Every structure is written in C-alpha cells, then in structure tokens.
Image (cartoon, rainbow, N blue to C red; front, side, top):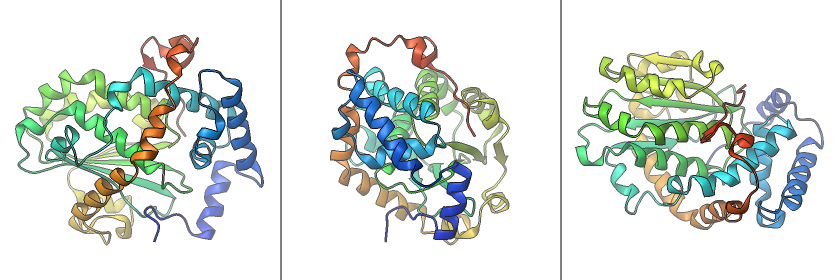
Length: 308
C-alpha cells in the first residue's frame, strides 16, 4: 500500500477538473519548468530535479505556469536564504528529536471526500519545558512538508489541524521570541511550496493563546483568514471531515496518531537522499542576480500569493 493514499479514479477526474488539468497539460507544464531550469544559470539543471516534484508544482498551481515557475524559483532560493530552517533532516536525531517530546506532527494517509490532505500538529500532554522550542517546531514542520513530496499524490489542497489544548502559558513568550521563524515558515509554505493551503483548524485553544494565534493568522492571506476555524473540542472536526480520515484517538477510524508519527519519523529517515537533493537545489542561488523584491513582497518577507 502507498505511504500516502491517492484518490479513486472517479475522485481523480473531479480533482483534475478543479485544477483545470486537461489531456497533456501536466506533461507540457513539466517541460516548461524543465526549460526554465535549463535557461536559468542559478537554478539546478533539469536532469537533477525529480520529475514528480515538478508535477507537484504544476498541479499545485492549478496549471498556471507563470505561478509554477515563480514558486519553483522561490523554492530553490529559499533553500539557500533560509538554510537555517532546512539544515536538519531527521526527527530521530538531535536536535529535532527533542522537539518530538513537545509536539506530534503527521500527515494523514487518506484524502477527504474533497481530495484534501490533512496534516495534524498536536501539543503533547506533560511535555518537558525544555523541549518547547518553537523554532525547532517550525523546522520539523517544514521537514515533514519536504518529505511528503516524495510520496504525495493528486490532491486539491492542504488542511492543517492544530490541537493545542495541552499547551501551557509559558509557551506564549516562546512564540513571541520565535515570531521571525514562525513568519518565515508560514510565508515559505505559501510562496515556495506547491501544496495549496485551503483551511486551518485550531482545536482546544486556551484564551491565553490568543496573541500567538493572531500572529499566525496575520501571516496568511485574506482567503485563509476566512477559512480559519476554532473548535472547543476534537468532536467538532466531524462536522468538517469524515470519520475514516480522523485518527482513532479523536474518535475516528484512521490509525492512531502515535503509530502515524512513528511511521513518518522512519519515512523521513528513509528519504534522506531525497531531502539532501532538495537542499542542494539551492546550492547555486547564492549567485542569483534576483533582488529580494522580485520574489519577496517586501525585503525579507515572501509576498502573500493568492491562495485558492
């Protein structure tokens, strides 16, 4: 069985219609990106870039090749300019193994009925205070985003669920101190990754976390702000998602979060060569003659791309 399950044949046709993908469009899009890579000295040679990765960019941008080129370029340049967020490629080894005592992060294997892929981020009960490293959590989230691209299938977009009921008040100061890393992580997710962010669900947020949630909310564009859901308890998720995709701890039919997290940590380690290759895509961009304002809306911050 595939690590990430794809859509049924019928569902795939519906997703392709939503993406605007007609016969031959995917192949033409991949060739276009390969031509861009070949024509741009500071980007990797096309033969060194996995074709499946290019397909994700074409589909993630709904066949908009201008947008796909911009995102792919931003993806490569980000590996160099934000190297500190990408330098670690294991959740089983230091330093990111420690943040796993603070939170669980996993992408769920089944798609929703609409073809959405869900990633869960869960604050663990009784976490050691020393493990609550917010910047490390950003790194771990980006690492999972990188690793899942090896296995990702045809999808309509991404959903993130944050279960934060076990958080302690001391985290507020840690979030404020790591505000720069949080902004960069969210802006990178929007501007440099092929996945289309569709919704964010936050479960069990205590009132003292309001400023931290507002910081995250301010980093997404207006469409996502309108698709930002707050829930008092996990049972409310069943109003939005079928039981078959929800983990068993939350009353669903999917494998346990514990089992899924273990699988992802192993999968990330199995994907080291793939992850190293992604990081090497930014190796030549130090010499890029592209000003920040071409890729960033303001100096040092990715522009907020339109999200469908």
